[in-house]
Every structure is written in C-alpha cells, then in structure tokens.
Length: 189
Image 1 (spheres, rainbow, N blue to C red):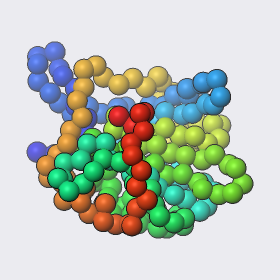
Image 2 (image 1 turned 90 degrees about the vertical axis):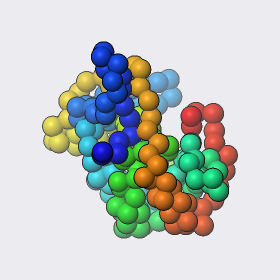
Image 3 (image 1 turned 45 degrees about the vertical axis):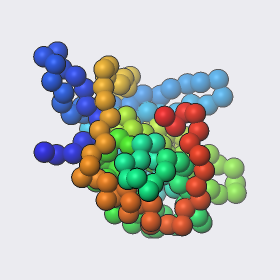
Image 4 (image 1 turned 120 degrees about the vertical axis):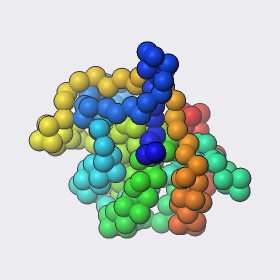
C-alpha cells in the first residue's frame, strides 16, 4: 500500500487518500497576504521551484508535531546555520518522500537575509503550502503551471497518517543536522 499524508472519510464509511486538484487562493488578513497552494502531488518540487527565487541565504525548520520514535521529542528543529539553495535542495530531495507521505510534521523554508525581505514557505500536515512572498509573482508562476484560482478547503472529516514505514526517516531527519531545537508553538498543532 502506498503511504500518504492525509485521508478523508467517504460516504460509505471507508477511508481513502485525499488529493487536491492543483488549486491556489489568496488569503488576506489585517497585516499580510499569503497564497495557499494545494498541489495534487510533488509538493517538495514546487517548494524548491519557489525557494530558488528567494533571497539567500536560506533556513529550514522541521516541525515534528507527532513523534513516533520513542527517543524523539516533538519540537521545532531549525537548521543550525544559513544554507545555500543547493544545500536546501539536497535536504529536500533526500527527504522528499517522507515529507510528502506522512502527517507527523510541517516543513518550512525561509529567506534569512538581512534586508528585511519576508519570503517564507510553509508546507503543513494538511498537504498545502503557504507562501509569503510577492503575491503577483507567485500568482503568475502558478498560472503558468496551470493551477486553478479556487478556494482551498480541507475535507471534513479527515485524518493525518503517521506511517510506521516512515519511522526510520524521522530518526534520520533528526540526525541530519545538529538542529537548534525549541518547543512547539500553539499554532503548530
């Protein structure tokens, strides 16, 4: 059986993998705007395409919400030093399958430049990507990739999958860096 991150309950009472339909929408709040992207697949590839245009250096944050390996603790695992895009790309490609097929975590890529430019990608356990960057630039990018401008909704009810087959990757990802670790924040759950 293929591992997947997210499932929904059908009318007949069975569970099945849930996939979006390459949609995106703009969300506006008092202090900011962001784009919510709901790709059908290849979320990490899409993140890398967007992050390649970010001001460097970059940082990554692995947010482990539900640890399945006894020796691991939930928390925010931040890269210990600024990264070049190529280093982020190697990390993302190494853990692509794990990040895309398991709901125990969130994953962030951010510009950590000193120019005050806010560029951030948040790939969350609902299999969507939140983009904080130039709205017009990202919208044009998504249109060229044939994404649909449509409100993104999470299915109700739904469950997150924590696949035992991925436990070895949880261990491996936490050993990849000498992470800076901090507790989960309220909005991480």
